[in-house]
Length: 120
Image: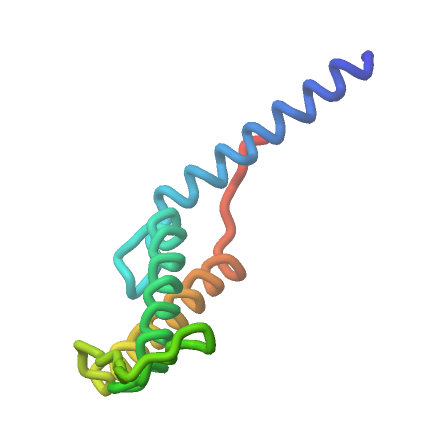
């Protein structure tokens, strides 16, 4: 058997293995979330982005003075005001953090405990 056939055989096994993993991810439900693994692989980055956004929002002050910098001198003092409830954002941040941690743990639990057959 030549090296080309050996490589081709290995590549075909890789294709079948990746297909088995994809099929597993498409059909296996994550307990407590009502989503399949592939849906969770979309959900987790969405929750991560939400958590980052809420973290940034909660770190802003309700009223913050805008620095005009050294290049401009102005007699006007400008402020930025939050147009949202900072306490509500803090609560939303904590909830998003909790959901994200639960989702990651549920996915990790499946990855470490569930076995499946791969037709290689």
